[in-house]
Length: 448
Ligand code: NAP
View: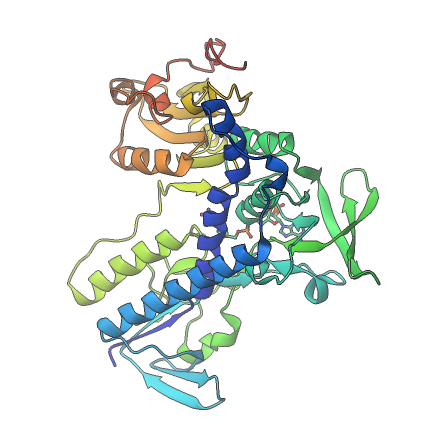
């Protein structure tokens, strides 16, 4: 055997389902707006989600993704072993199969791609009564009134789609929402969610979750600033407090792998650990974006380096990403804060604008949070360091511009790009107001 890959499939598929639901959970809103375009929609009070139909559709989708993956592996003559792996020695992995039997595999090269599992805070009731985003679409009953702990990607996406599906959602925010992302954009996202009914409890950490006789869950939390404690009763408590790397069970010392950081993640600059033939890709890597396409691309490049004589390394800079909240947030490159830290505010030009997507003109939707910005070097030709976009289909918009940023696009080139009218993506080509100018970034026709 030339290569053993220690891999896991299901968490990625559950993230895919979350993104899918985020996109389709807005259906009720679209049905309402369709009335303005002449659709005769029966009373919207009767438009509601059927939880069991939704979860069945999601589970079927996950099964089909897993099936397609297995077929793909078989066609490529890759043996798939469903077992729990651990190292026996630097070239041997033991897989414990479902029936308890063990299978020993030896290989010239080994890739660790075990990803992560949801982290549960160490509070009473967390493990017993709370769920994670991995479980939400396995719930046999609707989630009902939900407390979401954590305001990262998963917390905001789950709170966003639960609210759009008609369930009450409250988010506990420990420090700031979407820490590490551009904070002006993060507040556009949370302002929009708040305006749609999502509640945010800022600077709060969970203390306990207790099951009541009614079957509901009483959650208590602490405001770390005011030191005030609060409690409320929920039907579901969803923990979205990050994921931890699954390296402990791997018996890495047996392989001689010592390049492991304090958080259990593997340090491997070029995906190669301190053991020359043991590699790591994906969420298990320390300091790399926890994004499925990043893992796939790094794995592909690694395979080419190992077996096709290629030399290209994974470039982890300028990886575009999108938070699939009701109003999506897509970005590529540096946040304004990081750019200021790196280059100094005087050496930057920030272009920004609010905009009103054309589809909201006829329904006269009051849009306050559709906003975009370009973070650029101030000196000509003003190389673009980061692009940020809050609005419909942000993922689609940013995906295209990400290629331009990778190629080193400048503001001059961006402004000389002819837009496609009427799209939301063309707003990037129309940027011309700088924050430094103090001019009003609102469009004349906005904010009806
Ligand atoms: P995350 O982005 O690391 O966010 C974790 C959140 O939980 C943060 O707000 C954090 O607050 C909070 N938190 C951590 N421990 C806590 C505690 N004990 N009490 C209260 N709050 C606590 O993790 P995630 O949202 O679970 O997402 C995991 C990974 O999945 C992400 O890194 C992301 O890359 C990936 N993902 C990607 C997508 C996408 O591409 N659209 C979607 C979903 C997930 P602090 O900020 O104060 O630490």
